Picture 1: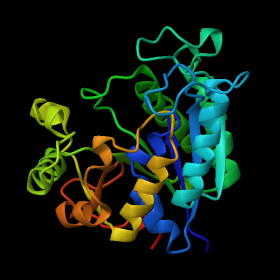
Picture 2: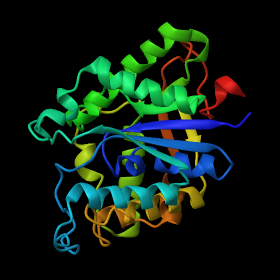
Picture 3: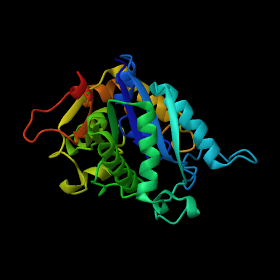
Picture 4: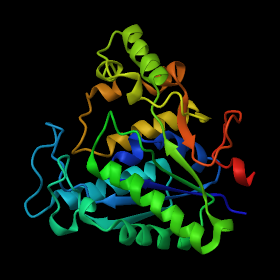
Length: 274
């Protein structure tokens, strides 16, 4: 049976920062990966000062779609779907009537369920409920829509509901990468995160840890470079090389939603189908 993973992300570039190396890890093993992006990212800004202005007549949404396609190729995604909503903006006021936050939860979940039924993945990766560090309304909405989608799938055929994992962020990961920046003598982009309270992290909930190769980490960095409007080549997120990142913390962490209480940590997203 062809193993397939479907990921649900809010905006272009989230597919990199939230589990991108995991996708590179699995696609290198022949796993088919499908990306669903909920919004067009049009409410964002050009954050890279070296990018300059958009060409005349080109929209930010079109530019970010092009960047998304390049990033998806770098990570190994075979298919990219758009859920078709507009970016709601960080304050939730952008996007007009097409904004993701204004969509009916059931209607958006039905769209996602249709894609899941079409693609038939064994695994879905999305966002959890802890948004203390990143309270973007579209990220919160992505969790709500995925949760309802899984409910709908269960109501139709409970035996065919994919195993669901939420991307997690741990303090231990932040600390390890912050210390690696200190060792390398470069400014740490992880320092602000370490000032957040423990409740902003998922350490206590993490039950799945994926070991990554240096190659998978390098592919994640390559994918991040594709988002040229969002990140400069000299950004702090590139301060550590793939080798340094691998030495410091070669893992991606997740919360398996259906994990049995008190069970041992899992090291494979396909644990239920292996």
